[in-house]
Length: 197
Image (cartoon, rainbow, N blue to C red):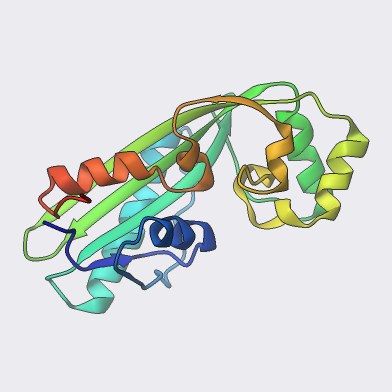
């Protein structure tokens, strides 16, 4: 049985594109409430689950439709247990990329799946390890000039020109893009939303 009507609580072009790629029927209804900030010492996986839950809950309340499935996600880049956010400017992008260069880091996506009438409030997280090529400052500055890093956590996009820096990954590629598809489908099926095939 196909997955029921679903709302994506995100305006992320990457998440929208991934769901379209899978041929899912869904509507986009982003949360308009400010995202919560990480708490001092908060585990990154706990934070992304809390942030995605915040988005899902606000959309569920705004829609007032208890029969839809709501999917929300939040992705962070983590190195040395510190969350690396989106760069504030080109200098900040360079700082972040230099920190990633020649080292590994973790990408964690929190997933929240809510359903009003079924009383479902499901939270989970997916992790992927990513290894960066040791790049020169000139290479990093050249990448920054493409403007691709400026709206992305960790200042790079694996699905774009940032792929040049990626030596290898351990885990789900789509998680690094912003939505771990296999993990998401497994959770939806387990929760009774239907199956993909």
